Image 1 (cartoon, one colour):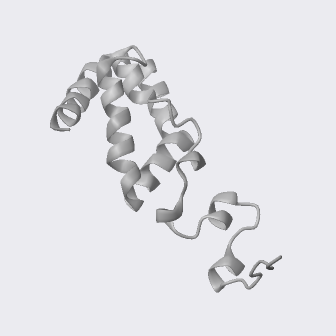
Image 2 (cartoon, one colour):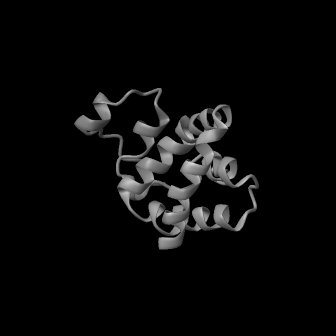
Length: 114
């Protein structure tokens, strides 16, 4: 049975051993889709459009999967969004519903351009 290579790089030596994200994923291109928690939830779009199954929300899922998840910067954004940024933004929007039409116009432009 072949032994695992136990040599650590400098990057590994400086990584927080308790941080699974840093420790397990050296390259953003290698991050598996499953590493993103709550990947099905579109918090902001659901808050704006009022239904997690709205056609616009479905379009944002496609943008996430087909655009953002296909490049390292997009995956960083998705990681931040599903790590709490998106849920926090949706909570803020829920608290100030008068802002929803403004956000909706911006989201409509993004969705229409895809």
